[in-house]
Image 1 (cartoon, rainbow, N blue to C red):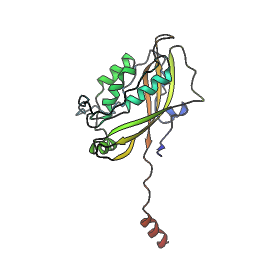
Image 2: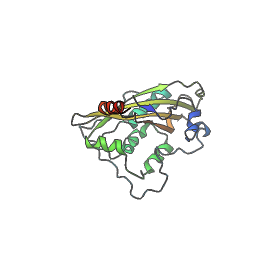
Image 3: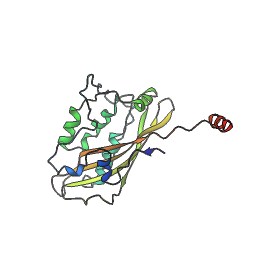
Image 4: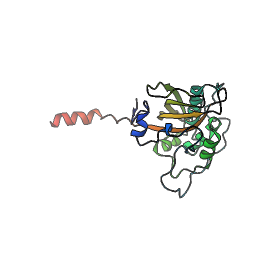
Length: 220
């Protein structure tokens, strides 16, 4: 089981990790950020993925109650972290597929975003196996979370994923905590994701081979 670098289970952790506290942005005022804004201007943007084919493996959440903030946030996460490297060139392709759950401003921020660098080592491993990912999403209760308001709500999600290669390989998929801000125009209207803060899970340490351990013991 992966060990989280920091768990977004407690709103204070957001600022402790250097992340912006989403509660600092009053509903409908501060503009949402893209999912992974670069620290430098991109030199060669990563190209978009290909249109999905009939053999694509991506999440398609079923019926979702738009008036339930938890259901909306979990449907967004299930879609946003469901990748298929046969068609996607980076995680951002899946993020764009999740735009149906975004506010118009958040969707615009994601569509205008261009990744500044490659998708990373995990993605490269998945791509070598032409893998897709499946995720389980759970909602955590927060002792310090504010009560849902008429127009704004917050949810803390735990995402645990597995990668499935088309060659039969399986491996670790996306693992993270996501703190989600949702807004709506009025009570009874649909909830939509307006901003997200993410803390990635750390890789667990590699086990020490038994031969190395035995050699170390004999040398002492």
